[in-house]
Length: 302
Image (cartoon, helix red, strand yellow):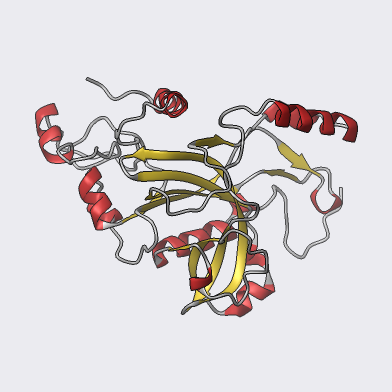
């Protein structure tokens, strides 16, 4: 039986979250290069699909059908054993989560023009995207909800609301709250930080929850976070002298700036492997995180 397409799988996952009927089936993870020496269906099942909780759907030696990989993965040895993850994804540096998948996300829905006063310089939005798999209940919530998806309405960006219309819309949503539309987390709860030892040396980005699913897999919650790129172009970060990174989760009620905070002051700290931190920096500095036609330090004229 052939593997379902990613869009169908995501749609079914969303429906089963809403219905509360999700079972522990492995989420297809995106994969990389083609391989030679094709294995039979029986050999693939015996070699790659014999784990207790699911299996990886990306490229592995001998597979001829797989999902192309586009993520940087870090998983614990236990997660790899449960889901037949490739051994090269296993990290002993990852702390605070069972697995983290990262990529620089490049939505193509719109371009914003007029950077540096030049109408010909246009920017396609990019975001640092982190998809985190962590033990159920490790992150405190303001609302006890099991599913959330941030509304994303591509064409609506062309229409700005008046204050009156916006207030009406907010009151309407509050009067008739829809399942999945209410953010279960606290305001400014998540952040990407530079760390050294047991302290935050420089805050890199505020991370916004996009998708949350309680017990996507047995005993494992799923959370997708996004944050703006640009920290690598600041003098302060360059001068901090640290390249190790972590995703932090604030305790309820804490509002002070993260700079200088101890890691123990957070509800949860997810320490990322250095190889993933290096990729984040490379992506942040790369051409994909700059507007088209952008020249750092230059005065661009129409």
